[in-house]
Image: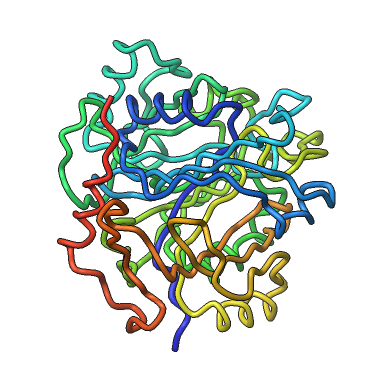
Length: 355
């Protein structure tokens, strides 16, 4: 057995209303395939929920364009709390979710014509690729980036697909690199710059100087869902001038309003645990065995980056393909690194929710 990072499975998003948020994500990102929907307690997460077991509802949704999905998460036992301060670029944590686009300029026009909040304008990033930033109705920031690989063409009018990575605020990029570069496999440095940037200029706090490092992975990801999850990137952002940067989730619970975790689909959890411990990132949560999500199951764990940002790992054991027919895939004894056949992955698209 080897440790395999199969790709970004999903971005966890804490919201005040799952149904309303998901409807917006379907319209603008085409994330319209339901993998599971479940309401339950979260007893394994009490470390991050004030030592109290809280209840929640969660929906995992994907785009058949490819890319990671969204785990749209809502407390049902308490209100979902917003940050008590205005989050600015450079604050520590998952600042923005990257979304892949087949045509960034066309996506920009679609968002504009359909009344989405666009932050600034269409810009070029330091690599020369077009990009823009948008806000969902809850104020979460998404960066639309040029996609680097697709699973299928859904012809969604926004030209968007799933999660393509994240912009992550850190206090010290050099301290964060052993996690993102070595453990998670983002070994390619696309750029490493200290500058004031046009594409940051309209973001809250974005006019100052930042060190920004864009990381990609050299080899195509392996594993059952790797072809669907596709290539992704991580951009680490460190403020050079601010001295008042805060943790985005300071004094709040995991599951509260905003991007709660970045989740990786993996194989070889025991080996990954040893590697994380040896590099100073021990598991803080570990389900140890199959954790039943009702319609799906697997082993999950959490680590924290040097600034406390939550990274989740899921070793998938069971996933529904077509629930009403009782069609599930058991992955527990599958050969590590092996792709699922495309026709099985495409069959997940039968769970599409239409508006």
